[in-house]
Image 1 (cartoon, rainbow, N blue to C red):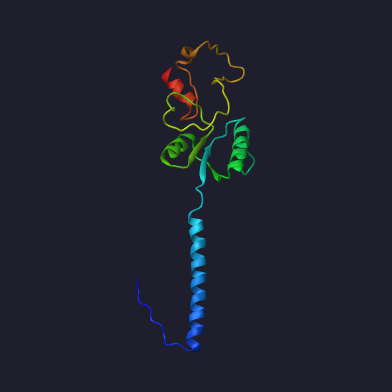
Image 2 (cartoon, rainbow, N blue to C red):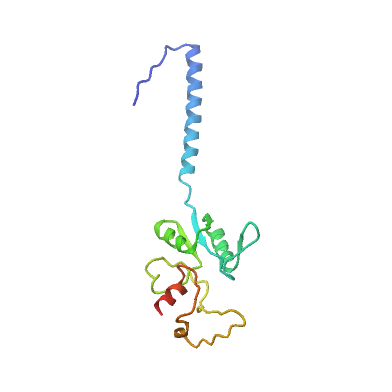
Amino acid sequence: MGFYHRPPAGPQSRRADRRGAAMRKWLWLGLCCIGSFCRAEPVINLYTINYPPFVIREGHDHALHGIAIDLLGQALARSGVHAQYVDLPWKRAQLQVQAEENGCLLPLTRSPKREDTYRWVGLMDESSQSLFVAAGSKLQLRGVADLKGLRVVALLGSSMADWLRLH
């Protein structure tokens, strides 16, 4: 709190008072506008990977489309929630979502290991995992045990990588 000195009343001082009052109104209006920006709804960070047909990155600008992107776009439009896509390696994206309040992974395979780590919003697809070999390969795989000693590649942090490590 400060002191306010009012000059003696007269035509000049009344004009100054009116200008001062107008300036105070503009100042309050400006502060209110700044306050409304500060209280804007938070933006959700959406972390995703190229995972056709759910998420597909194409072109020089890596434009996103696919089943999951289309569904999420409709849900965001209906809810009025604002979101931005963030490009990080999958394992780092998972750690980031666990650390922040407004993060979302898309798509993410539900597994017993992940059940308590995330809050599950919705089911997009129900499917099983697959294992592929190069075209023309002579490998005869009948089960997971046949993979022992072979070079197997899986996305770091994926449910398939976790499953292969266990088996």
